Length: 270
Image 1 (cartoon, rainbow, N blue to C red):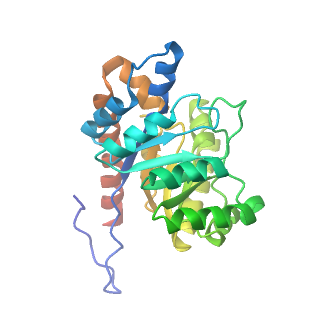
Image 2: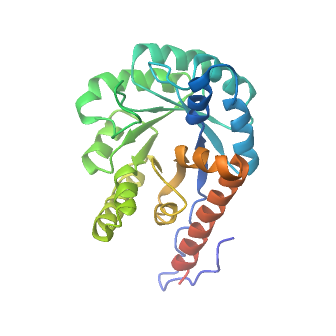
């Protein structure tokens, strides 16, 4: 609930704080399944449990090497999910054809290197405008919203606008790493970079998301950035699920996000 706000002398109330959605990435349920082979644990079952815990959508990254999520997983998720599916993918012709065949609610274009353990940085949008723009146009023509996973960088946001993306997702990995290292100055600097980038993205007409490496301890400062309307969190929640179940882990994250958003609403009402 948004707190009652004092109206400034101009007669205009502050802009209301937008709701903050939670997308849960289920890739590493598939990682665990693939470590032994077979069908267990099932990413689709994980998706349903995440929704039960309060997830607003499900994210799955279909990598070119199929190291975790498989083509069959994408088919089942698209056919059976009760919430939006966000397909993370490289900007390649193969992945474009898969996306056009399944028509997920959104596609998030990410950089991908086979030797990396996870996505290690943002997409080089400035250097790939000519490649990205026609690919994005084809996705949008099919009714798919297009997101670009980027560093919190103003020039990259400008490039994202040029290629007609709908959304930018800010890479929070460096911020989370600095928090883990207890680098207070570094954390403050990274948070300011994210605030500046989120404001620039919203001003450019882009919807702003964020994610990568977020935990119970790092989520709230990001959740208090008003222009960010969705967080995508995966590895940490799947890890926590080992100790108390996935629905519980998602539910706790949802509470922390909501608390941060409520605090922001109160702050804006003063």
